[in-house]
Length: 376
Ligand SMILES: Cc1cc2nc3c(=O)[nH]c(=O)nc-3n(C[C@H](O)[C@H](O)[C@H](O)COP(=O)(O)OP(=O)(O)OC[C@H]3O[C@@H](n4cnc5c(N)ncnc54)[C@H](O)[C@@H]3O)c2cc1C
Image (tube, rainbow, N blue to C red; front, side, top):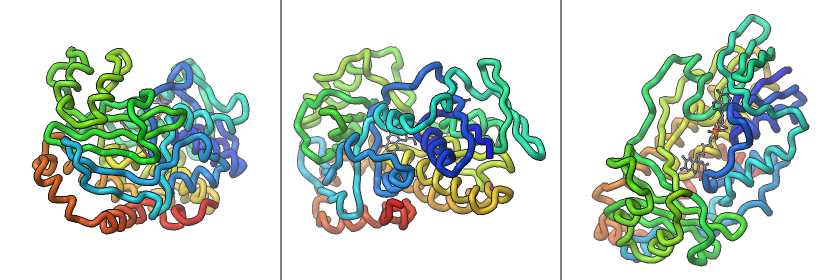
């Protein structure tokens, strides 16, 4: 089968690997003129790691394995420690590194840059696609892995309102201001939600959430973040001192309505194009990887009914993941009552083993159970 993939993000590149592995002919059409760089790091959970392992993508040496995630109050008091190894595994990997290892397995010529999909037409036995560089392509299947503002999604379902949640993360990588070992740290305070985590190459991934859109978009972001988070305990002041205004960027959180059918006969959506969700629990890329495997399996079973089978295989879990992420966003703010020091300290009464069990159950509910257990 000839497969065109719109978008060379995590979903599109992983889909390319999977489709090539299944014997299909693949071309990836990417709108950007060159590989995208930056964007901090990504948490890969057992389900995403298992899909990558099944594609022959080994991230063990490329990422940083975490053993636990601590939650603290703004004053630095430890509220809980979740043992993330108990329910599987958690690896932090920089987005650049993940895209590099995914790209490394593609034959030369698979990836075309400056080739954003502008239009497509479905016909009985093929799909025709036009790109911004003047190209015209014909294939048996078009995969729309073109992200939250997907042109393929808009063509399939019509224009939708901007799916903002009212929150954005300033986030990025810095040279470690403090040594976190193998632990991530989440800090919940009255003025917001923040986090740090070791990533690969001695770097630390950080985020600081803010209400979005910003009250004053022209303000210096580091000054604004210092005003908001300057009163937090260590390691936030060290982090704020390590930030440079020119390198700090906000990533708005989105949440899509997840369609019942993820495409038509010759066009399907994958990843954020189908189900952008708030990044609070670090689920989106892992859900995109689960899409990849489900789509590959659906095409192997019966290409004629693949879109329906794929949508059926994925929709329930993607909806559940999006719901969990949105609930977590509602609890972590910015500025909910739960974020104040007293309720945060009260939650320290819940034993860590119960929080670990709840967290493990949540990830099993969201990730495909067999994906969490077997990497094949
Ligand atoms: C702040 C933040 C932190 C996050 N942290 C995590 C995390 O820790 N763990 C996790 O699992 N997820 C995380 N996510 C979510 C995760 O980043 C996304 O779910 C994931 O990147 C989706 O991958 P994708 O390939 O579907 O889309 P994208 O990565 O957005 O890629 C889409 C690609 O399509 C290209 N494109 C756009 N339009 C066109 C077009 N018309 N034609 C061709 N190409 C086009 C774009 O240039 C881009 O390269 C986070 C998200 C944010 C905002």
